[in-house]
Each structure stands twice: as C-alpha cells, then as structure tokens.
Image (cartoon, rainbow, N blue to C red):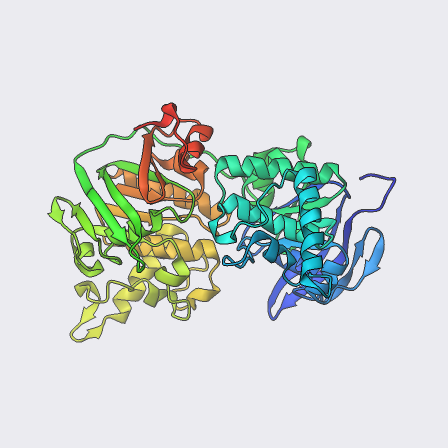
Length: 510
C-alpha cells in the first residue's frame, strides 16, 4: 500500500445476507488509489454483491465503506456518482438511436439550456478523448458503433460525471482481442492519471496483464490478496476453487472420420430481410471439434439455431449423417442424431422453476424409455437423472431440487448431460462455459474432449477465443454472417482477432 495517502476504497467488515444466502462475510478490502485492482472468484463468491454495495444497488447489513479516507454512506447509485464512483456494466446502458454526445449528456445535462450543455460536453469529451485515448465521434449514432467503441462511450460517460473510481464488470466479454488490448491501454492511462479501477473478470490471463493487485473471493470472503507480479494464473485458480485446477486442455491429436454434419451455402434472413447468416458452407467430421470464433452478433448464434431447427433457412442445405435436414423441426433433426446445447441455458435450455429431474426430460418427452402407458415412468426418470448427476458430478445430487437453486456451472452440466444422454453423433455446443466458474469449466472441457475421442462430431461456438483455440481441431472465423477464414488452433490470437474484426491476414486465410 502507498503510505502517503489513504486507499481510494476501503471496505471494513462488510456483511450481506439474502435470506439464507450469506453473500458477503465480514469483508475487509483496501484498493490503492491510482491502481488497477482485480477481483476474481467463482460464481456466487460474492464479487457482484460487494461491488453492488459500493455502487449503491444494495445496502450492507453491517460494515463500513471509506472513500479516500472518509467514511461514507452509499444508499443509491446517485450517492455513488456524487462520490466519484462510476460503473461500466457488462450490458451497456446506451440508447442506440441517440448520438454519442446525447448518451453522454443523458441525465447529466448540468445546464438550463441544452445548447450550453452540449458545448460544454463537446469540449470536455475532446479533452477526455485526448487524455485517455478514448477517441470516438460525438455525433455518431451509438447503434452504428462497434462494440469496442460503445464501451469507450460508457467509460466517457463515467468520466464526464466526474468519476475517480471506475468499476468494470467483465469488460472484455464482447470484445475482439485487439479491442481488449486497446481497453487495457486505456485502463493503464487512467491509473497513470490517478484514477482507480476495480476490474471484475473471470479471465485470469487478463488479470495478469493489466492489474497491479488482485483479490480472490470464495464463499463470500476474501481468501487471498496478491501483488499481481508476485502471483500466477495457477495460484489464483487454486485460491478461487480451493484445490489445484487443470487449466490446460490435454488432448491427443484428432482422428477425423466421415462427415457427420454438412452445411452448404446456408443463408438465413431476419425479420427485416437482412442476411444474418450469409452463404455459409462447412462440415464437421466424426471425431473432431470445429470451433467458430467471432465477436458476438456476427451470425454464430443464428447458424447454430438454424442447424438445430429452431430457425428456418432462406436457402441452402443442411445434412446430418447423410440425411437431408434442411427445414426440419428440432424433433425431426434430433431423430437424425443431432443434439444441441443452447447458448443461453436460462432462456432456451432449462425451465428454472422445474425440478432438475423434469429438466432432464425437456425435448425428450416422447422417449419410450420414460413411458408407462400414457403416463411418465417417474421412477425410471429419477433413476436416470441420478446416474447422470453421478456421471457429471452435478451438485447437489438431488433430482427433485428446483433447477434455479443450482449454481450456473451445475445448471450447465445438467444441460450437457441431458443432450449427451441420448448418444448423439453430432453435438452443437453454444457458449459451453458462459457464466461458469473455473472448476466447472475444467469438467466441461474434459467432457467435450472425451466425446470427441468417442467419435462425436462437435460444432462449438464460444465468445472465449482461448476456449476455441484450446478445444478445437479446426477454427472457423465468422464476421458479418460470413465465414472469413479457417485456420489451425495454433494460429496466433492476433491473426484470428484481425479476422474477427473483418481484417484480412494471410496467416489465417482459408
């Protein structure tokens, strides 16, 4: 700690309960002024609760907060903003039909005449852009900006409101590698200018690249605090989980067989007639994982949904195990040997109010294995759920527990177990570890490699480029609905990132 000035933020004895859930347990944490401080932990570790208390979303049941050495009461977000605290959310809080300038001014006009407020804002934005490498056209419509540029607008908003302390929640979740690198430069510049950054992320490589210190939360408590230069990814992972974690995916070379999934010239248009998938051709063979890399919103989701029968193609052909699957509904495609782990388990993979046992049946209600005449064989369903839970290490191993009460990682294991249980030859996997803690990531990765080694053909979509490169045998890159390159997983992150951004690079050409 810098002994010449007090911490920018200091939590003392912060305690918070939500009913029976003890989210924060007597948390003590000091964040040095002018630093980038990382906060990591598994799902449910208490990170979001702690930062929400700092930003006024929640009030602590007990404890004190000091800002630059002064004890403060933060009861609302307006209180936090007045104290110089800003927050950049994972889901941007922007109005896409308004300009950058209008978004920055919204709720912070600061003058009776809007013209005077705009003039003051333009001058300040120009200075902030120059000081912090945050250049963005103030007259551009937010909806026309890239995701990285939209994030810069969010940071500009907080700085315009006078923020000296910035909280960033999973800021690189939707950025290309080059955009993430630019963000890191901005964070370093902010720290050099005396701002304080609290960075929440599950990407430990980013923690090592950008932070000065990192604190680890587990079960609501701070269990470790390190100078970043004195720790390692392995040490952080072990502190997060409480055991050693295998961070590298061990796999033998693939031995591809016959094509199991074939997509030819597939085009899908949305309700406005715009092609969200534009002439895509690909194949996946038995015994291989083909990963699709791309910034979110470039057609990967629509491609998976169309192959799974959730959307209907405008033109093109889909074949599963040599059978024409074009335009079939999900039940018919499933009967051809295809299973689908959807990207959003809450919206499309689970009914959270149902017991786990009933979620294991979703999409397979007509399976004769669970039929007793016109009724379900509840005993058989319960037995199969118990076996799947043991096989996939789902905790708690209670088939009757309401699915909403499982952690995100265990919910994801339920979805994967259900889809694999019917022994598909083709598996579509969307965002397999989104919102999943590091221990469950390890288990899911091992399972996918085992399925590949058993001869399944797996088409994988992930927003995590490290995950794509680690699991895949071949990598396809999508941008604006099209395949713009195919490469080996050893191809550099920079080369793949350029393709994701729509730039050509000879190293990653098809």
